[in-house]
Every structure is written in C-alpha cells, then in structure tokens.
Length: 262
Ligand code: T3D
Image 1 (cartoon, protein in one colour):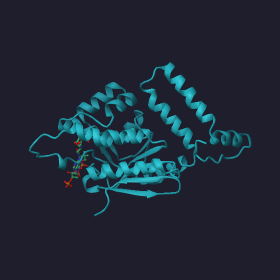
Image 2: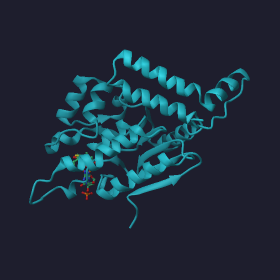
Image 3: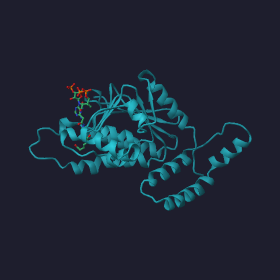
Image 4: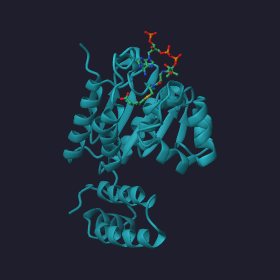
C-alpha cells in the first residue's frame, strides 16, 4: 500500500506530500502519525533548513476523513482527536524552528484550510479554493482557524466564511491577505520548490527567532513585544550568520549562511 505521506529529502530542505488523492488527502490517523513523525524528523535534522508541504492529485487536503465518522453507533469524542492529532500538528508547524512553506495545489477544506494557514508562507494554485467547510456538517472550525482567520482577514470576513462555508478562491484569498501569493497552476510546484530551496540557504536561526516573535505577537502588548524583540535580537546578534551577513554586506558579496545558532 502506498504511504499516506511522501517524504522527499532535497538539498537542505524536505518536501512533504499528503498522499491520499482519492480522498482529497483528507486526514486519517495514518496520515496524522506520518506527518507528525516527518515534522519531528525535520526538526531534529540540522541539514533540513526548510519544509515544503503540499498535496498529491487535484486537492491539497479536505480535512478530516469523514468516512471514519459517518454512521457510528455512538457519538465520537472529537475533542479527543483534536487534542491528540490536530492541535499537536498546528503546534508542530508553528513551533518548527525553520520555515514551513505550503503549496496549496487544489481545494483546502475544513482542517485542511486551517493547516495551510498555520504554515509560514502560503502559495496557492490559481484554481485552488479555501473552504471553512465545518458548518456544513455541524462542526466548529478547528486547527487554529478561529485564531488565524480573523487576524489575517478581519472578523467580518472570517465570520461569514465560517458560517456560510462558501469557497474562497485563491485569487480572493491573496487579495484579502490570507496567503502570500497565487501562482498559475502549471507553475506552482516549481515556484514553491524554488522558494523553499532559497529559504534553505538563508539564516535559519534568525528566521526561527523571527517566527518566535511573530507567533508571540498575537497575545502580546506592544511593550511585551518590544522586550521580546530585544531578547531575540540579542540572540540573533550572537549568531555566526549575523557576523557573516554584516561581513558579506561590507565586502559586497552574497553571504554564505550556515543557519546555526553558534
Ligand atoms: O473528526 C474529527 O476528528 C474532528 C476534526 C475535524 C476536522 C475537519 O476537517 S472537519 C471537516 C471535514 N471536511 C469536510 O467537511 C470537507 C468534505 N469535502 C467536501 O466538502 C468536498 O469534497 C470538497 C468541497 C472538499 C471538494 O468537492 P469536490 O466536488 O471537488 O470533490 P468530491 O467529489 O466531493 O470529493 C472527491 C472524493 O473525495 C469523493 O470520493 P468518491 O465519491 O470519488 O469516492 C469524496 O467522498 C472524497 N472526499 C472528499 N473529502 C473527503 C472525502 N472523503 C472522506 N473525507 C473527506 N473529508
């Protein structure tokens, strides 16, 4: 049987492909476990300096695999799966000390849409759509959606998307600031790989500190954030990449970053 997740280690970065195309890459437990293990491997591997997440086939991810949920004799405890699988996934992506790029190659629905939003930089194919599908089956948006979406597109738009479950085109998502960029379908894979390969040559430690600052900003006052920036900048200033970056600037050459903290 083919693996639910394809892991492709490239030069300095790793591509993770959700691989259940006939179920639009919806999540079952196998896929959750494989993705968690692959993200942990990427975290532990100093040679991996960026991660690209995408989907196989015509969809990115349709959220939870509903075939495991329909027709059950007893109501399932969905809080338990959120606790055990979805919340740890979002925390892994946000907490990974390297950039996570998401290439949304097709429809992203339910948790699939919100997992894309948890990534650091989101590119989407022109034909892709984002659907907060939860209300269609009586559920609440999860995987951080109610946290991410009002922050990135505003409360009014987030509420309507979540209550109506209408598809949002990739073009509109980019216009609303929900994602970084829309790319023509035929160009998505190459563009996402190029971007990830570029990020893998950048000052990984500094990017991890940047990610830490951005992750904290949603809950911090300006004062607290200024203090955090000071503390993180102190750490960045002691990194070899900062020494290399300033030296290369003065020598008018491209810096050769190692990505290491020391
Ligand atoms: O349960 C918990 O643990 C709690 C956590 C919940 C997190 C969640 O994500 S809840 C939300 C779950 N997701 C959805 O409600 C989305 C369901 N899917 C759709 O609404 C539609 O498939 C799409 C709008 C995403 C795409 O529509 P379309 O017309 O392009 O494709 P399709 O024909 O509906 O789907 C293609 C196939 O994929 C189809 O199978 P078939 O008929 O060819 O054998 C369809 O059943 C299957 N599929 C799509 N989404 C899912 C799925 N199978 C299982 N689970 C799915 N989520």
